[in-house]
Length: 270
Image (cartoon, rainbow, N blue to C red):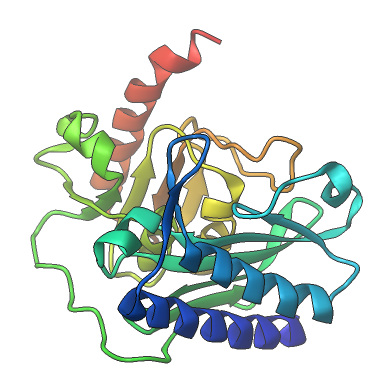
């Protein structure tokens, strides 16, 4: 998988430079059918990644947030799962919390994954069975999060606003972040202790991050505690619960209990 990761790294850095250029020069913003934003930068990044990866690996399938999906990928043994810009709202607002997220999946499991934040220059990557790696390929670097004695959990802003994490105080400090993919990468890097979304999401949001968490020694499941399988016919996922390898046992217990209590009523209605 060294060739795959090398080419992926080069393609993502090229696409990331274009995202930074458009962030400075200006971009168009549109509203998709689900009322979420998409920008000309999302589409440009998607085009660069698809051109580079599909040219190099023409037999692989493709699943991307910004490409119309079809069933052809389901018959491919290898599939690239791509979020050109995870955290588009952060990108639009000029916040350094967006990233490019790409995973190569074989038989439902990510085997190569990378997450790149062009604003901070952080490039996170992993190959299945060969550990987690972080390098800085651009400047400036992101300043560290403010220190606090409590473990740090990165959470979705809207879930924090509606009070879905109130039960974790005083055990865990919850901080909103604009990208779940970036949150997973920061947990893998030991810069946060957990990343939690209790509802929603899609495979392209998390496929790379799942591999990074697992290769860093952490644990990641759906919000209901189920393992992830990728390249399914329906790419939607039911939340994400990532726990870093250094998270203390008491904090881990509190997060698991709180998540189970929050999702149980919703699960029982199905």
